[in-house]
Image (cartoon, rainbow, N blue to C red; front, side, top):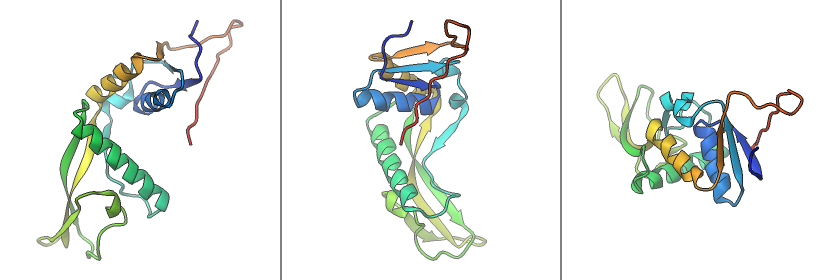
Length: 169
């Protein structure tokens, strides 16, 4: 039987583990239910790079980008396993008309002329996460005060599948 929990998070990948750690930091007793160990989830082969491209300008996205940039950069500076700051270059083919809409979230964006066929070169630092060590770090942080249950199925007394979900705003 599971220990009493305020919140049950379904999924042991990077999103589930991050949600669980965040909820635990805010005082919740957390249980994570996952079909696989976090080290065996799809998240281990995912790439995580801060880079808000392919999205329209939106103040909410800018706020999320700013918060994510700040958090990941802080983690990289603190030596969190897997969190790194990567020098990044972005070559533009379209005419450069000024910094992109997401520039206020980025601490060090610089624009330079570029050789054809490009019109500009943007240089900035993009926080990135290498998932295998990062997931292990999340699991270690969570393990101190939460329950992580690895099982491919959760069954009730009458053989019915029980599903628990948590949605964050």
